[in-house]
Image 1 (tube, protein in one colour):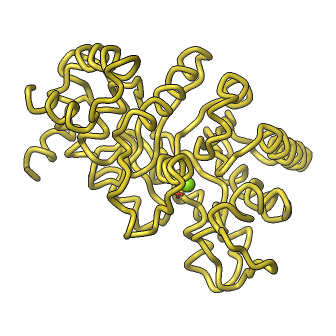
Image 2 (cartoon, helix red, strand yellow):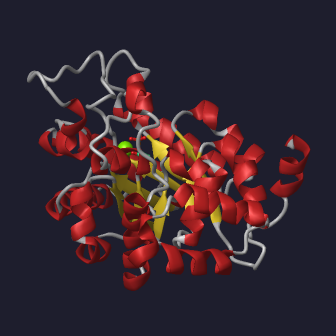
Length: 326
Ligand code: PEP
Ligand code: MG
C-alpha cells in the first residue's frame, strides 16, 4: 500500500472519469511541513495558527508569528496555504490566557472570531504578521466560527486598516489577499448566498458543523458512534454549501476529519466538492480511492437517493455498496 501511495504521488489527482480534485493537507506547526512534499498534497487547506499559541508559555510575539508564517510560505513555495486566524477558546485553552467568565458550554462560548473581535489587538498583530510574511506573494486568510456576516465585515475592516498601515510605511504587500470563512456554525446554512458574496472562499469545518447540527459534543467518546455524518441530514447540509458555492462562483472546500476517510471523501466529491483538506497521512488512501471513482455515477446516485422518498435509506450502507460495486 505504501508503495502504491508513493507511486500515486506523481500522478494527477483525478477520478476514473477525469474529474480533478485538489487534495490538500492540514497543518499547524513547522514539523508538519515536510509532509507537504512527502504526501504530494496540492497545498495546505488549513493551517491552524492557534497551535503556535498553544505550545507557547505566553502569547507569541509579533516577530515569532511572522517568522512562522514566513517559514510556512517559504516551504510551501508555489503551493497555496490557507492561514486560519487563531481559533482559541472552547476546547483550545491557553494556560496563560484565562477567560474571566466561567462557561457552561465552552464550545458555544467566547472563542475563535468572537474572542479576537473582542480583543482586536490579538487579531491586528496576527494580521500584520501575516501581511508582512506574505509580502510579494499570495495570502489566504480564513476566519473560524463565523456565525453572522457582520463578523466578516469587522475582520475585513481590521485587515484593510493593517494593509493601509503597512503601505504607508512602504512595506512590500501580498500580491493578492483572499479572505475566507469557515462554515462550521449552522446559522450560516440559512444565509449561504449572502455568505458566498461576502468572501473569496469558504471551507466547511465538518468537525464543528457536525457537532453543532447534531447537538453532539465532538469530544464525548460516549456519543462518538451515535450519529453518522454520512446520513441524509448532514449530507444535505454539506450539499447545500457546495451548491451555493457553485451558484455564486465562490470556491468551496472542506477541512474537517471527514475529508480524510476514503468513504466520506468519496461522498464529498459526489456532493460537488472539488477541493478537500485532510491530515497528510490520508492523502495517499484518498487519492487511491479517487483514481477508481466514477464521479458522474456517484452524482447520479445522490440525485436519486438524497432527496424525496429515498432519503430515509441508510446512506452509509448505500455508499459502501456503491464503492464495493466499483
Ligand atoms: C473543524 O471544525 O472541522 C475544523 C477543521 O476545525 P477544528 O477541528 O480545528 O475545530
Ligand atoms: Mg472547527
